[in-house]
Amino acid sequence: MSICSCKCNCTTAAIVVSLIVGIITAFLQITAVITVAPVFLWVALGISVGFLGILTLTTGYSCCARACECRCAALNTLLIAILGTVLFSVVLLAVGIVATSVLSAILVGILLFFLTLTLTAAACYVRQTAGCDQ
Image (cartoon, rainbow, N blue to C red; front, side, top):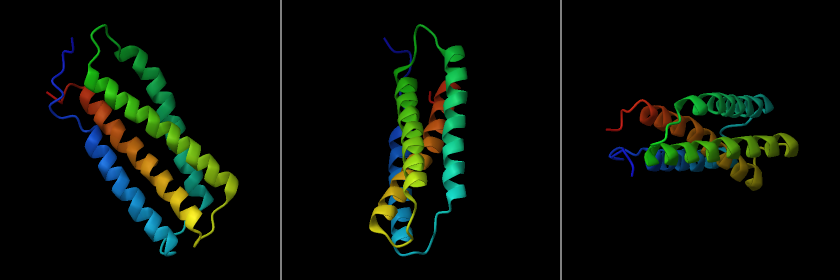
């Protein structure tokens, strides 16, 4: 049995917002309105690795026998977002970015989707861990 009500499960909202940011970023990249510097890719990689380290350290302390299903959903979303950010930032660092390339625009859009999802899913996870979803 779950002790949570899941009234305010914000992972769906996090995914929708991240998808919108990813699509807008891909469009702006393909039209060469924005450019992505390698330093941004290193920062994205650092943010995701930092989140993974913090999450690894704190999850062991916040576990209990009656874990909330909502918290597990937010945690799964956060882990997927972190691993996606790591994967796509490493791929973009290895490949290199061409300002008007369709493939680069798609990869940058996916990277920003995962990076935004990392930040919004972390907010959801903190909110649900603190018990503010009830």
